[in-house]
Length: 350
Image 1 (cartoon, rainbow, N blue to C red):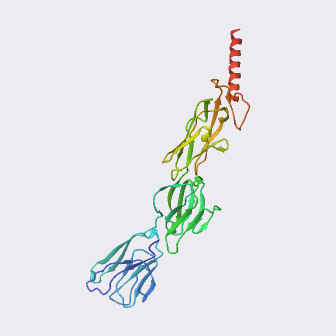
Image 2 (image 1 turned 90 degrees about the horizontal axis):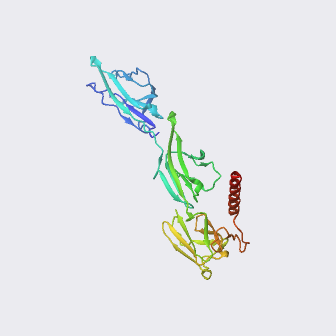
Image 3 (image 1 turned 90 degrees about the vertical axis):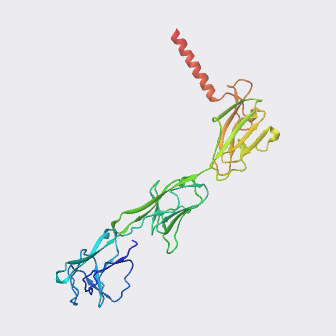
C-alpha cells in the first residue's frame, strides 16, 4: 500500500469557544516523538479539566497525545483497503453546548499493475523484447501454458533467453526475452497478490512475433512442355527489412548464376519482395524440386514436371540428375480407375 500510517488529529482542547479546529490526515511516520501511546477506548479522559470526552467511532490501534499538546491523534498502522471510509472526532462541549465534531475521509490507494507501452507488441523474430511491469515484486506468467516464468527475481524456466531485470529502488519489473522466436507468441501477464485480502493485481500484454514467410505463387506442382519457358515467382513477406537477395535452388544446387543454362533471376526488394526465376527453354533435366530461400524465412518449394511433346501424362520426373522416364503414380492410378469404371459399365449393359 502507498499509505503506511494514518495520523488522525483530534480536538484542540484549549479552544475557549469550544471550536473543533479540524481533523488532519498525514501519511508516513509521525514527526512528533513526544507523543505517548494510549490504547484507544470509547471514553478517553485527560487530567486537564478543559479536555472533555473524545469519542472515536472506529476502534483501531492507538490514540497519540503529547503532554501539553492540543493534538489528539488516531494512528492507523499498515493501512489496508478495508480502512477506507469516514473518520470523525467529537467533543461534548461544556455548559450544554452540544457536540463538536469534524470528519475526515480516508482513501487508501491500492497500487495497480501497469505495463509500460502498448497492449500488443509486434516484434521481429531474432530480436529482443522488454516487457515492463510497474508494480512491486511481481510474477510473470505465460498464459498459453500457464507457465510461471518468474517470481520477483527468481526464474522458473530453463530457457536462458528469459531474464528478469529490476533496479534497486525501482518499481519496474522487466521480463526480457532475447532472440525472440515464433513459439514465443502469446499473452504474458504480470501478477501480484495484494496484501490485506485485496485479490490479485494483474496486467496483460500480447506478443506477436513476425516471422518472414516465403511462398511460391501457384499450386504445389508446375507442369510445362519441353522447350517452353519455366516461370516461377517467389514472394517474401513479414521480413524486418527487405531481403537484398533471394536464392533459387534446383534440387540441392543453387542456380542463380546459371545464365549459360538459360536461367535468369530478378528480385525486387520491398515490403512484399518478389523474386522471379525464368528458365528459357525447359529440358527433361530441368524437372525436379525448386525452392526459393531468403534470410530468416523457411524455404518455399514447388515441383516442376517437364513433359516430352504434347503428352502431359508422359511427364519426365527427375529428382536427381537422371531418372528413367515414366508416368507419375497418380496417372497410373487414374488409368486403372478409368478402366475399372468402363468394365463395370460394360457388365451392366450385358
